[in-house]
Amino acid sequence: MSISKKDVEHVALLARLEFSEEELEEYTKQLNDILGYVDKLNELDTADVEPTSHVLPLNNVLREDASRDYLDNETALKNAPDKKDGMFRVPKIV
Image 1 (tube, rainbow, N blue to C red):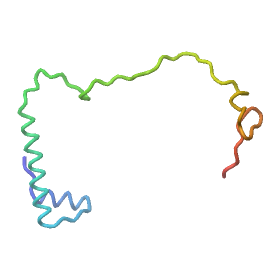
Image 2: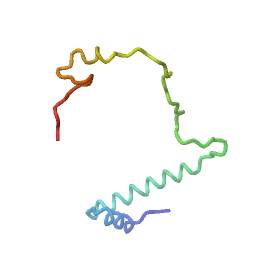
Image 3: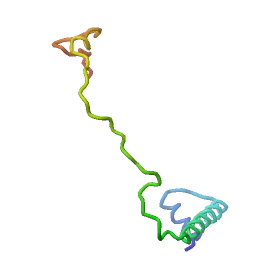
């Protein structure tokens, strides 16, 4: 498969990009080089390679869910500049 200059012009039009003639030729060459590299990768024998969704193994690292002692309400509000009914009181913002 090969990308033509007309293909690059079409994609540029869809993306609302403007390229000079030199840029069109450069991008056409670069895209064809990329496709050539992908074709090289397709030559690799991957018959014995297990399919993966990520190169590295991903594991969730979760802490154990354990009960801990937390601040009681009175201690948490001890240094609050303004409090009411056991809660922090803040200015109304509307």
